[in-house]
Amino acid sequence: MRTEGEKKQPIDQGLVRQFLIAAHGNFEEVQQLIEQEPDLVHAVMNWGGDDWESGLGAAAHTGNREIAEYLVGKGARMDIFAAAMLGELEIVQFMHKWYPDFSELKGPHGIPLLRHAVAGGEQAQHVVDYLEMMKLEAV
Image (cartoon, one colour):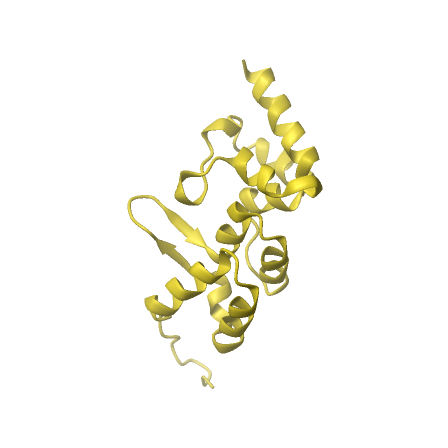
């Protein structure tokens, strides 16, 4: 346990990598790793270039609602891509003010916002409909 004023050490990048790979679909491993190192919930990795990914981002683009909800419950920072996959239309609509051209938004691995919403399945269909409507209005 850290004492007050003791500086936190960076999380081992191998552990971050293991966590991110698990966050693509292995819920049990995600739980075990978060129990082992709670700060993983905020960990990100640059896979190269401008390809940044968090555990929540991994769960969002693969449509793993159970992992995404677990990570948000543990304090993961919600972003527009996770909101789209989770069907959180109000968040997506609010973010539209800051990102007026949704077609330009790319998440981890360059995956577009619409694909994140599609990955959310039936529970995110209203977000898909909204994004498609916004795309048509922009033409």
